[in-house]
Image (cartoon, rainbow, N blue to C red; front, side, top):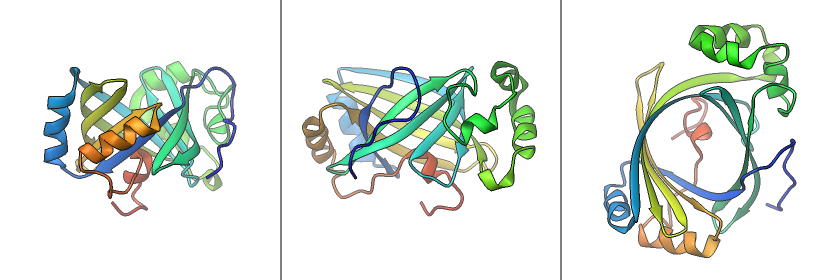
Length: 200
C-alpha cells in the first residue's frame, strides 16, 4: 500500500500499529517482564463503523477520534489520528453524522442520544454504532508502546481479548513482535474485529 496523505486539518499522530486477537498468555507475561512502565485503565468507547476499513472512528469522552490508514509496512499499519469537537473538521461520512449536532450535548446524552442521531441519518451512509468497555494494561517497552486489553461489547456482553504494539520505528517493532511470538498472527484493528459483519 503506497502511503497517502491524510484527510483533514490539524496535527496528526502517525504511528505503526500491529494488533492480534486471543489470549496470548505468553506474550502478555513477556510484556510485563520487558516493560519499563505499566499502567491500568478502564475506558468506554463508541465505535462508528463504516464500510471503508481505512477509517477507524470512535467517540471517547467529549471528542470524536478519527484514524485514517495511510500506509502498510512489514505487516504493520500506519494510522494518522485526529480529534474533532464538531463536524466542521471531520471527513465524510462523519461530518454528515454530526452536521447540525452539538457534539458535547450529544455525548452528555449518552447511548440513547447517539442512537437517535444515527436513526435520522441517510441509511446509505452505512454508519453503525458499537459501544464497548475496555480494561487495558498499558506498557512502555523502550520507545515502543503496547497494550493487553479485554474488550466487552456492551450490547452482547461478549468479551474479546487483544494485544497490540505500536511505535515509529518499524525495525524495533519487528523485533518486539518476534520476541513476543506474534510474527505469523494477522493484524486486525479494533473496528474491524468488533464489526458483526467480519469474522474474528
